[in-house]
Length: 78
Image 1: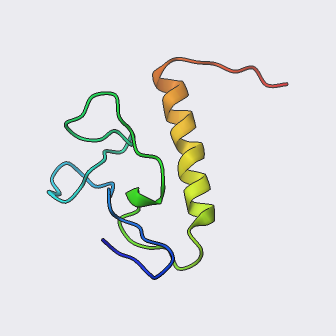
Image 2: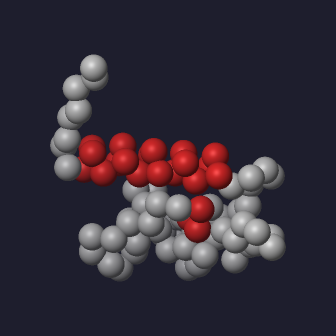
């Protein structure tokens, strides 16, 4: 785990299958658990140089795209 006083990250880090400390895969799925994804700052393997807010928002947006793709959901643009 990597942390500062205010922004702990890395508690469920994303890593290749060869890394024994990795918890989630590239699609944010928790290894060994069916139907569970993690989509927050805990997947960051190292802390970012600035505030974690922007990175956490990006992770959430990417998670939404991955889930929509997995469920073959298409949302028309307005």
